[in-house]
Length: 400
Image (cartoon, rainbow, N blue to C red; front, side):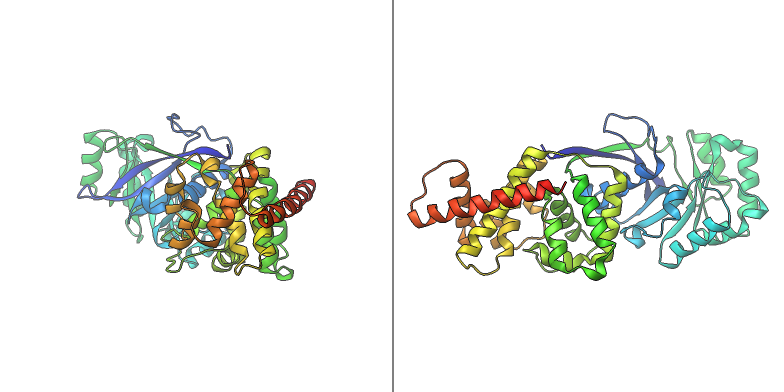
């Protein structure tokens, strides 16, 4: 099956009225994991972001609040950026990020494009003042610092226009002490332990991502049609891109019924960021047999539509792919399609097999399963286009 479980944990950050201001989002290998167990900080961050944007949905995780996400140094100085909603995202700079001129310049770039900055597990000293001046939040670990040093840090930060978050608040005494010092926000076990969130998600073929990234690096020489051909080779990637289009971050009011339109709406720069994100997250798994079946159905539907000279032939490839997406992600077809920005008639064509698209899917599936096809002309065309589709899939696989 071309799916896997994605998981992350969230821990609330509350204000002085104990209302939730936002959540810190934490990497989890799976829903049973109690701790992060991070071996690769860049990959862990990429997995958290990918899960937010392409699988779980940012709005489902943080609502209208802020998402605090740990960014290691390597990610911060990566010029490709991330396709996160700036109004909901706070970039947490880890304590081991290396506070030098290069990091400061990178943080200024992130800040300039609209992201909020938080300094995590921070210990202030005068030479770090430029970082504090740039930051919106400073997180002080009351457990690690102890009450005396925590008090000293709060006083040292008062001249700056920065919000202080007391973290690792584990007891009522910790909370009361921090509140007396008039810090702005609180986080810790006293309020809530990190809660794990998990969901089944479609997998993406790593070779498709590598091919797409290589093509996007020369995007000036590529047409939308060429990008469409690459994206269309992987149903998991199609699913994630359609979910991204349907997320609040895009604010999409139109519906999408072709890959070409989806890629146009996302844009090459954003597509590059998403591809880079998926590559770094290492959330990939090859499912060669099923992938071949999906590609074969999609191409067969497209070629049959071409043979009949149907309009909007690019719809048929997408319909063929999506007609098998329930098998790929392990979720009921109606539920999967309801998450995607598809026209109602297009969804009905896939589920209820209505219209020309639905008729074509019915014929393709009947041919695949050796069921009777009433029209001899249709049967002959199905045989011819099936042979073409098999050759196309074999040629595609040989490129890997």
